[in-house]
Image (cartoon, rainbow, N blue to C red; front, side, top):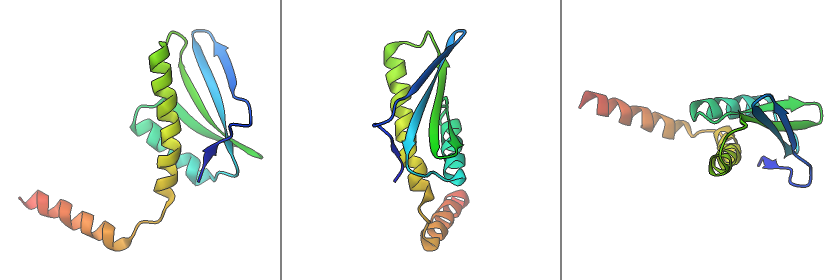
Length: 111
């Protein structure tokens, strides 16, 4: 399970009117996991991406510097929650379950 490395420090960088936060992750994270995280973030309109560097993976969040406190908290919570979702997507799917979902969808299409 991928986790935020709470023993490490975050990086906060201001550029013009936006802020970028780099949140360190614990342990090794694969490129596939980074791609899943970014795809989830994009699909849910969360301004985050995963960056893999030698020895460390980071979740990077960029938002306007004028973002209000409650929106910052909501965004950061969403960023954290996507970590668990990216992990869950890594678990192999049961082919029978996938087939059943496809057949259910098809039955709905047919009325």
